[in-house]
Amino acid sequence: MEEPIIKVGDLKKYYKVHQKEPGLIGSVKSLFSRKYYDVKAVDGVSFEIGEGELVGFIGPNGAGKTTTLKVLSGLLYPTSGKVQVLDFTPWERKTAFQKQFSLVMGQKNQLWWDLPAMESFILNKEIYEVPDDQYKKTLDELVELLEVEDILKIQVRKLSLGQRMKMELIAALIHSPKILFLDEPTIGLDVVMQKKMRDFIREYNKRFNATIILTSHYMDDVKELCERVIIIDHGKILFDGKLEAIIKKFADHKLLTVILEREVDAEKFREIGKLESYEFPRAVISVKRSKVSEAAAKLLKDFPVDDLNIEEAQIEDIIREVFTAENVKS
Image (cartoon, rainbow, N blue to C red):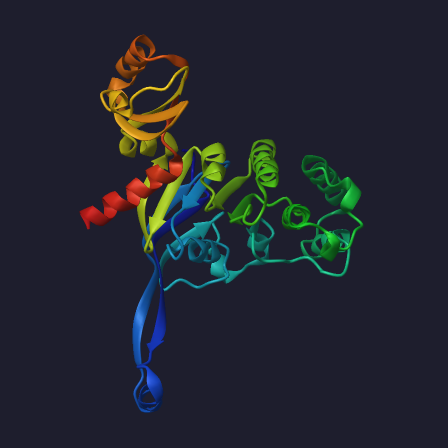
């Protein structure tokens, strides 16, 4: 990796939370003596990201993903640790830094609800001091990529969720940021719109060499977009590396999906591997990676196979294995 443009060292973000005993007596006690405890939203996180990388930042709810992104974008002060983004300290909120990144949160709206999105684009152009010629060039490219020319002048409140999300992206990218933090950008979208958003993110990353950190609960987002993933849970990093490496480490099996010409006793499949499901004419068998070729050959030789497909385990199951392994270890 070239010189990293995002550097995070031992980042911690703790919150003091008031702990109150239940009932009226607890309320009275809290007036005179309050008890607090620390919630460790982020607990010693370290990583580096190079220019042009598209990194998946994944984990369960409450893992610390959004908190980390808010620190990186300067919305939160950390409890301790060192963070450098484009050689800036984010929470100092220098103008030169704010012009070079964007944070897009799938559940937040920055557009004016009762006006066409174009009005918000023009406002952002002025806020970020984007020259007229650059603004026009950038807007034209984004409108083409997202295929939204016909809805630019429609009130935001009249747009569908998918259309609004596209407009949110244009508003966030109108100043051509070098770094893009995407927090659940496809949340709530239907399957077709999720794919369109993924296609856009991939193309934007390639065309502009933008550095992107993506959080998502949809594993298809991560699988299709990110070579590298950072897995976080309870504020700590469990894994940082190539997605294919985690698949090899935690998915020691593949799935053989068989379409049969005639029905077969389920017990016969158990001689091949673990029978995951069987509803004629379709059977799914889990087989150790080292035994896949042997198992496929046996199926084709001894079973009335009409079609055979070999697949990797679902990424969701693999990530679940990571968390399970970590829990066992700790």
